[in-house]
Length: 279
Ligand SMILES: NC(=O)c1ccc[n+]([C@@H]2O[C@H](COP(=O)([O-])OP(=O)(O)OC[C@H]3O[C@@H](n4cnc5c(N)ncnc54)[C@H](OP(=O)(O)O)[C@@H]3O)[C@@H](O)[C@H]2O)c1
Image (cartoon, rainbow, N blue to C red):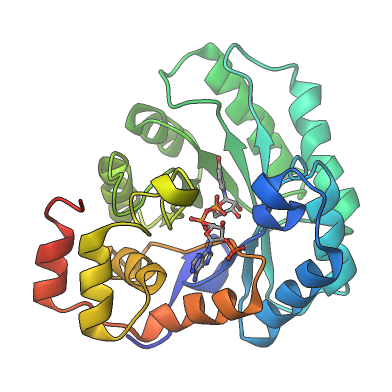
């Protein structure tokens, strides 16, 4: 597969981006390997990555500082996307707006390509959700963000939000072993909204990881001369043109291998195997 791109609102980004959460350190909660993190971020840009996913609450604060220290002044065309954590029972609108502003300050930018309203869990549409959307729309109207994203949302919430205001990306859990968000991916495709699967290499991490430890994924990888991570990423890329990847890593070697998944084509035999039980 050749390198391809998809719109992230006003940005046309490479479909392979970078998720920065892991740079905060083991289990994303520090302490970080500062030098290693800066090397990975610079290697990502040098390799043509133009989409980085972050949050002020990674670290907390640390990951945005690392991105700024590694990359500021930012290359033209780099889309930095962040998140603000919405509360289930509604927010003080000032808190969400302040969360967006914290990101702008720490990353030292006047505007972010997008900010995701990140919900604690997918849920129902209610007045709280509308209030949260209104804060996001006001931040976009004020020019603080170019686009509104939604994360950890239900299909009902996506349909409701997208009918009221422009949504540029949706970030939900989705990987080979958890396809629960497939209807949301389909709806995003229908509306040409970028779908950004988080934890694309599977969850939980470690020995219980259902993707990286799957014998089926291992067999496919061995037959195609690829790694299991590349099979997991190539499968997502092949699924739909609006999928944007943000795998996270603290390793330059893994970063490069993950980008090379763009060149891996999964044939029918591989796709059939991956659609069966993974264990
Ligand atoms: N919206 C949300 O609620 C939410 C939730 C979670 C994550 N996210 C975003 O999604 C991004 C990605 O998610 P994630 O980091 O949780 O999971 P992930 O990208 O699926 O996996 C990251 C883990 O896989 C390892 N890894 C990466 N490349 C590898 C390779 N080629 N071979 C073997 N292992 C590899 C990494 O370890 P090494 O460092 O050793 O490579 C790391 O432990 C995050 O950075 C964050 O930006 C969003």
